[in-house]
Length: 298
Image (cartoon, rainbow, N blue to C red; front, side, top):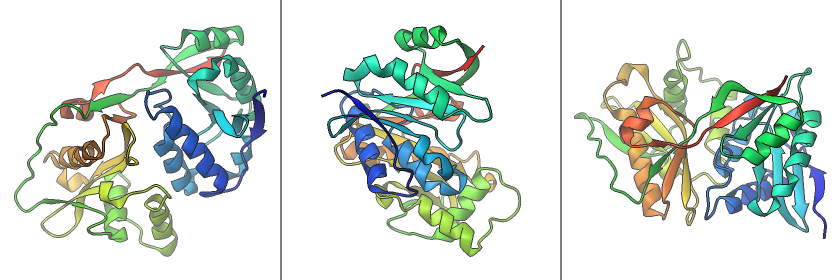
């Protein structure tokens, strides 16, 4: 049976088609890291951040199926004008078709760029034949091996590690994420903002026991680490990590990340991945992996 193309359903939220794609992304990374720049956790995080997502273009996402099985995906993350490629290793011959589709369906006001692994010389050749050149822009990736002893990260006196399963306080989460990403002013607590924050923490595969906060002596959440992992998966995804500026340079972010990683290791994960090259992660023990570069038309 030939591989067939179809468009994503275009339905907002955690629809049946969302779940099918999520299962595909989980499957191709289940045993071997095939598409770790865009794993299932990033797909779910994309839909969880609906306020930043161009939902009107969801039907432009491309899906390829062999029978009833999804074998390839071309998607954007929050805005069109760029493309990420996720491919079952047995369907390498689809790369040219994926790029041709992406150039047409995902361009934005004449602008388009494609993310291609530096290690994939075959895909690079296809890009060159289509008039693309690599740019100075790239997406880094790093891994923390979880089959090795993890660093210890003691907390200052009065601070403690808790999961959102133990204390789910939406306003505290909103505050640490607002301040931790350097937004000015107090964190807004209007109904719309808190509803959007609840969506971020309420995806279908979210496990609150893996969302770790550092609680300050006054009860505030001083730092936070989100983690995406399903029991049995070999890999976990770190996203997002934030520390309130008031509490920085105290080792709190490190402690939150390591605790989340430790919990994933206990569930069978062999590695925790993060889309970053920040020294913060390297100091914890993360190691750089081959990056992916953004390619654009001449």
